[in-house]
Length: 435
Image 1 (cartoon, rainbow, N blue to C red):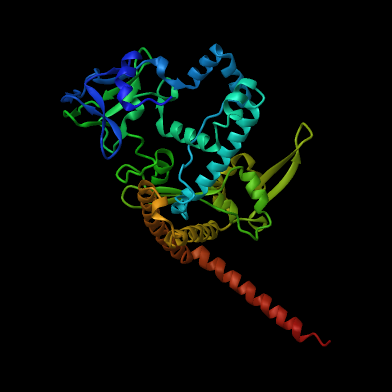
Image 2: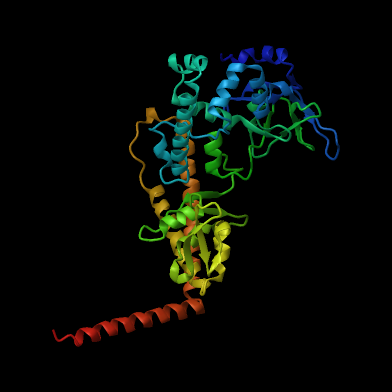
């Protein structure tokens, strides 16, 4: 049962939650938040900390609490054993009218994959719990639980989950109402009683009526912030993105490469301090080599009679190091040529995504798109468009530099000579054909 925010003070007293000179208030622009009731200062350079909020350990919801409750509730334990123990990750909860805003962004594929994963999880939970009469009656026979409920539960968990130093991933009432800021005034921790506490940052002063804030993470990208929390803070997000990378469609070894790599191929792009563009993709190197370069796949029999796909590079078994193929590729006969292939491949991939980002969005009914979704969806497109444009420019400069490298010029010259010789041989054979 949901309680109105007006009931929070009574709930706090009933559950021994301690608010010290702070209170929950409507912040107008960010919903509910926690504000200071008086001027507070935390001295710098002292071991003492100024506590703002304390939540008893019994109210912290984490994996240990779930296990303990299962020991006390037989029916809950039946459900937990049936569905298994899974860590829930957050998808987007945007509607089909709002999701096109993500087209061409790094979130487009991620959101689709997450929704499919959630659908599989929901089906598994439904199948497993349907065999338990009490849960089947409560969840399924009554028709009260739907897939959308699972999506929203997942979003609620991830957007409010805290990483506590002792309890790990946890949901903590009241502290989960603290809003994010790029200049946070507080941080959360656990004390000697394992209570979750909110503490004023050393050396800071907050005034009466000033909002108390924490950081949700200053190394997360705009896409990560939007995916996990539903908003983007341009001042605290790192300029980076992760895009999917597909094998060449005409590569006969494409399937073997994907199986051996063992995870979805991606390219990471980031803007470092100072504006320098950095990118990395181990699979891009694997994608750009074949047998003539020294790559080989062999199916070997293991000790138990089964078969294993093994990867060999320059006659060395590198199966267990395939995730670091960008390092292994340095032993290529002409490493500059391989780097050139990779640069061109990654550049084409980024250009494809940029083209989608710059394309017009499909027509939509403004009344069907929530203002916050439109605002942050367009902001994500703007941030990633700028990053992709600069990354493509950097790749183009590297490509031109590689084309002028002595080894590359010599290699391309030899290839051109070989092609001319081949054309000459074909012409000669045609001239000798008296049929």
